[in-house]
Amino acid sequence: MIMSFVQGLDRYFAVLNNDHKAKYLIAKEKSLLDLKIELANNILQSCHFCERRCGVNRLAKEVGYCGVDAISRYASEFLHYGEESELVPSHTIFFIGCTFTCAYCQNWDIANRVVTGTPVLPERMAEIIAMRKYQGAKNVNFVGGEPTPHLHSILRIMNACNINTPMIWNSNMYCSSETMDLLSGVIDIYLADFRYGNDECAEKYSNVKDYWSITTRNFLLAYEDAEVILRHLVLPNHLECCTKPIVEWIAEHIPRIRFNLMFQYAPHYKASQHPELNRRLGYEERRRALEIVRDAGLRNLV
Image (cartoon, rainbow, N blue to C red; front, side, top):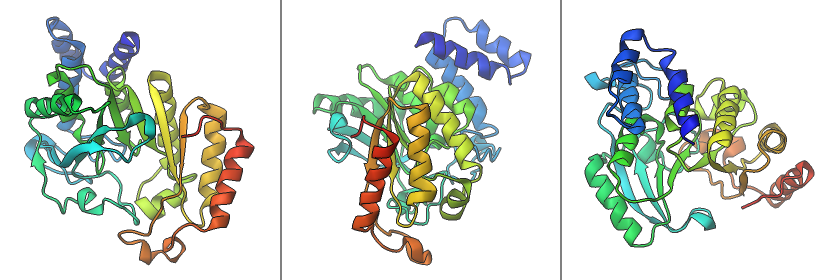
């Protein structure tokens, strides 16, 4: 784990100038996590935590697509019993803002920052995590919205924690390669969505470009570094264009992940603007999705 951590730092150092590199390497008294925090703060000045790469200076209170400046906020935190069985009770922390704009978003009020949220104080959040651990939490689960815009704060929370608990990155996996490097070695479980089997559907329903290449790259990196629980939300009318290519790619490239085929789609938010998504799944669609998984040979199902 430490080797992958150091290799991740080396990859990121390659894009820094020599002065920055010297500054970080000279600070030998700092831990590897301290160095990651400094690198994350550096990214904040021209933000590219996600692959939108807005380049805004969040330290100067500018906001990019996610609508988040340097001050992270969370909508709620609690012991969650609705996650995968091996994770519950899971201490979930719902961060404000998102790098996607999904037409059918269930948490649209959080993603779109309708909920104001509470500012994140890393030391206070570490105390809350310790309290939830005492109450029975098996892990701490960073979610949203989307955790990616809050990487700098999440690393600080980890640094302030004085308990040993698994760290979960609950994400749409559209983060940048630099973010994946910073996550390497500090995340225990990627609880990750793989939603679309092609770029066209991703752009139409979530307003993201180059979805397939970015997401598959990040899943491969996560697979090498930690445990992966992969969620695929089956969308109505999207079995052949999305479910099938996703399942076949998983079977070929990352077969040992835990796979959660999710049938709980409901037409939230602006799904009514897309007639093909404005309904729940039918029986035949659920049957076909299970057939696709069976034919691909996936066995490690949630």
